[in-house]
Amino acid sequence: MPESAYSGITPERRSNRASTNLPMSQPSPPAVPLPAQARERTSRLTWILLALAVLIPIGIASGLRYLPASSVPVITSQVSHFPPADLAFDQRELGPTPGFRPRITHVRIVDLNKDAQPEVLVCDAQRNRVFLYRPLPNSAWEEIPLGDELNSPAAATPVDLDGDGDLDLVVAGLGSVMPTDETVGRVMWLENTGGVFVNHILLDDVRRVSDVQPADLDGDGDIDLAVAVFGYHHGEILWMENKGGGRFRDHQLLATQGPSHVPIADFDGDGTPDIAALVSQEHEEVWLFKNRGKGEFTPRMVYQTLNFDLGGAGLITTDLDRDGNLDLLLVAGDNLEVNRHYPQPWHGCLWLKNVGGGQFDTHRIATVGGVYAAAVADFDVDGDNDVVLACMFNDWHRAGAASLVLLANDGRQNFSPKTIASRPIYLATITAGDLNGDGRPDVVAGSLYLDTPAPDRIGRLTAWLSRKEPAR
Image (tube, rainbow, N blue to C red; front, side, top):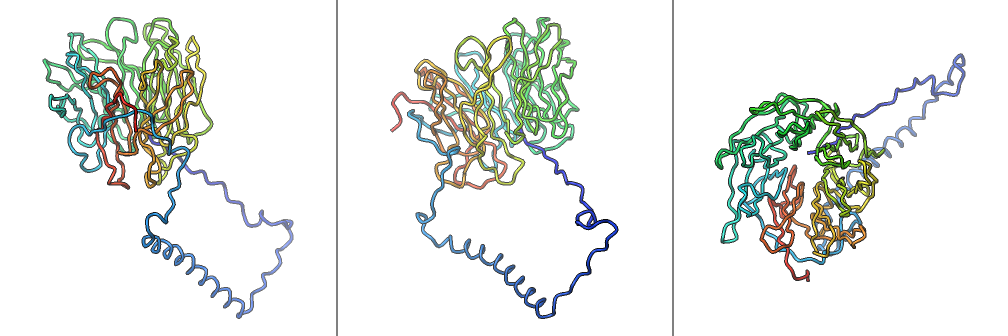
């Protein structure tokens, strides 16, 4: 989970002598003391001003609670309040009740047992487990824990890691949701043994691991791994070479704090998988590691901003404009470095359009506060790709602040933000796919609570099942 780290820089204090306009050899004029009566008036005035500074805010705060609710205006923000979406969804909670501070760090729609029945794969950093949710005939969902407990799992990806024909899981072990540079991170392999998942450690003794993605990176026929070691003040991007028998050798691609996502795709069209990476903290960069073959990579920065408060929170691969080139979507809305996580005018969604050969042009497609994750699908079934955004931070103390936002595509890659839902809040992860078999994409999102300012809007794992009729 991205957090920003900042260090204060205190300018060197100048000496009193250097701050005057007098020559160094000329003595300063002697101070003239105030008369006793003037000193007494100054002292009384100071105490009166201090008392007013304390009592006035207390009086205002006390009086506000006696006003009727309609007397307090609701101030909406252009980055947090949007018109309602012209789509209809049935909203429901999956799994158990939210409980205390649910911390869902990752969701993904999968078909883990290959029975053509969609399931929801979930990482839960509050219960320290990976869960699978399967639909039951009575519209309920069965919760199945996979493997043993893990300390703050951050992401899980299905892959046949051992080549035996079934789907295993590779899991990024964050180790701690809260910032730390301790070596609490892990890369785990949950081996599928006839439907029972067995934990194996592939990498440990590293700082917090936020993402792991599989691909044959060196072209030798087996599955290797790309790893984002977020850390805190220190981190790195690795690729792990599969040596067989569950053994891996790690290679460092970049030493930097804050790598959060490492999507893999053939971005330059040469037939080999490349690695993209989002580096947040105060860097706010996107890197591309071009695969030269045989485990060799050429690093290149494809996005950077001078706004170190951008708040990069997510990076996904998608062909947004359906031109055959795989693009990147960057979402920005993290501001965990401040005590009150208000939406900012620079938050939103950036489209890194692949113009060929691994070159990218950057387009801002939406300004939405507190965005943490995105999913792409044709939600209105009109033949183009739309985007749905999950908001982790927003004006939660204001009525109607959006937590789930649809970016409706007009067919020319112009996107209009529309509110799908304003509860539950603190949505940190999202996925899209057809859950109920009606041919329309549905949405699942997970809430990550670090505090609870709005207990009436708590959620844990929430699904929005699309309906054919428009919203009313």
